[in-house]
Length: 60
Image (cartoon, rainbow, N blue to C red; front, side, top):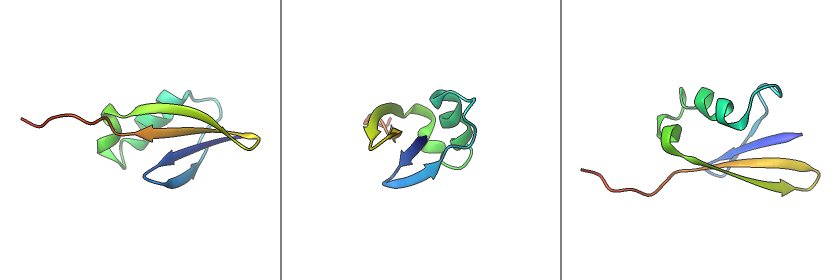
């Protein structure tokens, strides 16, 4: 099973046929700051967790 994590919140897999990048694009509708986030993959028990981490940048 896949779990998606953003801002310490877990989200269920919306569609197992989508890539993690496609799921991120879909979640960008609700969390616009995810547009430039990186995806970190790790195991969480028997599940695979994909964590969306906002990239640190400069404004201007």
